[in-house]
Length: 293
Length: 131
Image (cartoon, rainbow over all chains, first blue to last red; front, side, top):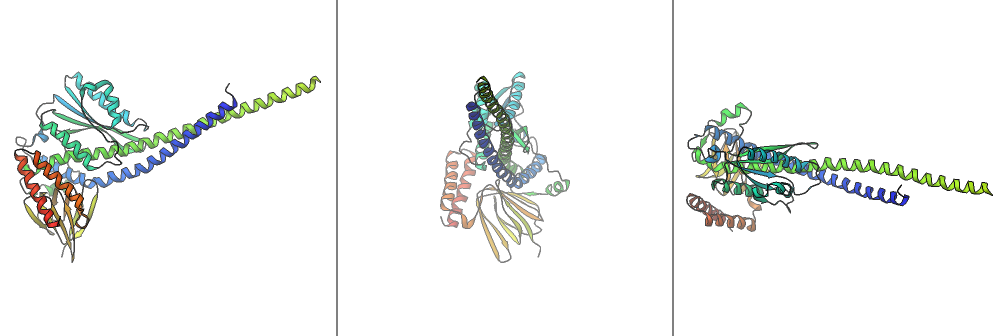
């Protein structure tokens, strides 16, 4: 049976934990809003670029199209780009991405493929390095970055494209969490190379763009735009990831705050019971002492 | 006279959008001016100045690359980086200039020619901006 003093100490410690989780939740909520705004702001560019690329890719001649689009013709070596957060305390955010990547790595290894891993963000590196340290080819550090900017995505894309043209891998897949809502983030694997672009949904837009004039010719534009398309896909994924991270942290901290509240209630009840028991005991002692006289 | 709807967007945000009489765009193979009812057209950009003309007013943006998509109804300039001409600082520009010079140094083969072209465009842009 813990003493009254111990109980009091525990209650105080849980109370300060609750204060911290509450503060983290509010910070995450503010950051989430900013991350969502950033994702929203990047959408027009990404959508236009994807629409144009989808059109160009659909019309491209498979024999002469850039290798970035058609692939190398083999799928022996896979590059997995695993994008996670720099920090923890955000529920299952990092683990779900890593779990998805792990499943893919096991499948590929079982099929006799060569796997290479490039991690973005510290948490993914820490978790994957335990089992697959020998598969690592690189790591991109995001620490010290307040927000995701296009330059970072461009750097990653340049690195990946450089490796591709060196023939280091055949297929590149990007792992990240797609933001659905505050309580739901979906771990997603997106194929980057060979590049695939989904055509815009409206058929009307398709008809208009089929008539484009190109300067210089279509193939030259395609070759110039493809690397940008890859960079934009990475950028979009990083933005989604940033929003997901804050969303996951917000709901994790909300849970933690509520749990701390429950714990405080339970401890307070126990504290009051012990206090009453102590008082009752003292009374009994006094009364029985008086009776003995 | 009919107006042309335009969008100027960068990967990180939408810079400007609205309606204008004409937009001058630094295309990869020469400057072009998009006006309403322009034929559908797609071109990469070279480093240069995008000028939006509406009535008597003129707004200029410095772009370092990207591409432009023009249709009869409107024009979309998808710039890798774009800054209002008045807001371009010497530091910002010299950083971009240094990047272009470095890219030119390390490039080989076909890429060398492209990098040289880009560097040339940057130098021309520098002189027209007065840096």
